[in-house]
Length: 86
Image (cartoon, rainbow, N blue to C red; front, side, top):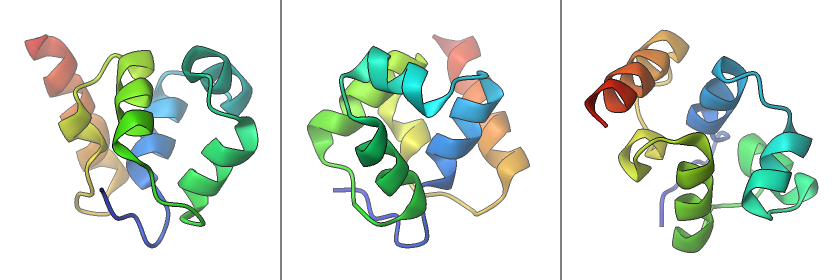
């Protein structure tokens, strides 16, 4: 399981980059808005099935959602590289 003790910045950055609200991502993943919010805030840790559903909905490989340096620009760059490679 991926650990995001301070919040899931990777999810926040990708969702923001794509202009998705929590409600829109909830509809795409069938994960409740409250659960997604808790994931982003670090109140809950994602399970492998939820990670896969979120990755599919955001059109990114699971690896992009893994914990990384806490830098929004670096995360955004990782998303662009991963999507270009797909």
